[in-house]
Image (cartoon, rainbow, N blue to C red; front, side):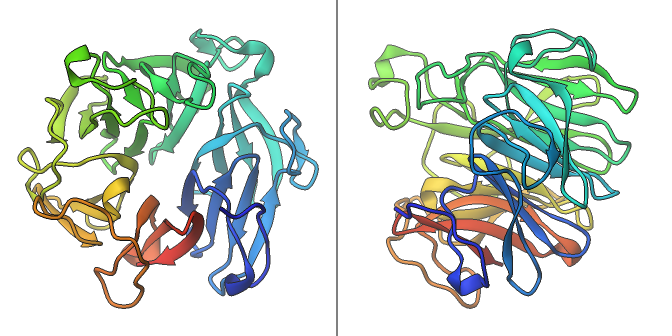
Length: 342
């Protein structure tokens, strides 16, 4: 595994662990890795945009600002970055010139409380999204560092922050999930990529990834603006055998990110262990656009194959959609992370 993040021209750069990424209107890519935000220009130049490579809670210019485990990133129509600063229990903002500020929360305010930006509290925000009206949506996990290194594991809330600065709770989960991700479409509907570990002891295994292999099942849940939840794709009944098809008949294993193409309405998810990017079209059909998924061969590939799609990626990390419906994704090969272009 790579031991350091290295900036510079694309072929010379290195990434440790990309938790999330987003593209701006100029096709610049921003990634979050542990305690830093990095920027990749359309020419492939990688620089550190914010964070000083130390775990702390400091606002200010990007070079001196500090975070503690960044796990989610989103961008507003005017280019303001929003990041989920997980262990600091905060949502932070970063301007186009790299100035970092705290929107809500902080390490001394960890917990759960709705209200104004001054009074509200977050426990462990892990993902963030923003709609066309400037409403911000946050996935906030209830068990902070519940299993030590097995963070982001348990029940979660979906919190809403209005442009006027009011925080409310839109939805509370009832499943035992891991690393839920969030996206919002043009109509303001919210989509959650949920991977659950069964509570039932009949499944066997310790319910913690990395400790033992427990059965996974992954699905997409749709929330209306008032928080009403419906199953949108996949199943929450325990099947983990991947397959394409009509959205409720399709199956996913472990969705580690979700993004929406504003031009077409298609939803893209990264099905991590299958090394695949899956698309749910506006008419509800699921297909595999990167990698290969079939019930007969569910295992992920062991080598990285670039070139014309579908290609092969051992482990797909995160995906986002940029201008002109272009896909950007992070993929792991031999323990390292790289930015790959679809």
